[in-house]
Amino acid sequence: MTDAMMAPLGAGLRTKIGVPAGWFRGTHVEMVEQVAAHGFTAFEALGAVEWEEKDAVRAKCEELGVSVSAVRGGGTIVKDGPVNPDYHATFEEQLRTNIEHALALGAKKVVGLAGQFREGVAKEVQMDALVQAGKRVSPMLEDAGIMLVWEPLNVKVNHGGYALVTSDDAADVVRRTGSPNVKILFDVYHQQISEGDVSRNIQAYINEIGHFHFGDNPGRHEPGTGELNYTMIFKAIYEAGYRDIVAAELAKTMDTEDALRAIASCARW
Image (cartoon, rainbow, N blue to C red; front, side, top):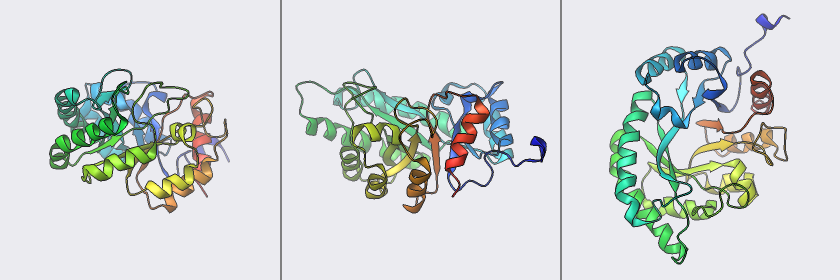
């Protein structure tokens, strides 16, 4: 069978994979075309809020049956963020702007970042601030039909000093916020480093999880380059009842075709 006769790499996947738009060349519309040509039905580009041709991207996505997953919402990693109540007005304005960008693109989720841990302030006080930030923006999210997903990050390897680390803390924030439009972004790479026990934690927190990122560990590269069994993890996500986009957020170590093949091979079982 020739390459031209072979099914696209992303055809027939059990997991709805969001591939990085930045792996493809050309205009943003051409990137969408390449996502679809490879057989994938979704892409992620957090920085797509800055794309100029949003209407054209959305039209092309609708034409080709491609979904946009999460885009940037608000907050920070390395600076003061919504764990500080003084930041809440800024956070609200960031979300207001980026919700409009998300709607223009057709995206349904925006990522929230908690900011740096505030030395000398109890963690419980800072988690309460995240709850209050979520409650403050929930009406806006609900009116727009957009979900805010708070992202825990690891502090051991990549993001020292970040305030939101564990699934348990993030899930508690989500429960106390009390909005169906505020959930967790469960990044498998980060949570493997921070707490391990990935499959059990997916099952335990699935009601609070609204989005997934993945990359292998160590290195945050393609599945198969590290210690994580992504066939098992994708299956665990599926069996927990999640049917939405699971997005690759990783640095590829091989050419794009091989990287896409590595991902797709884990999403069939």
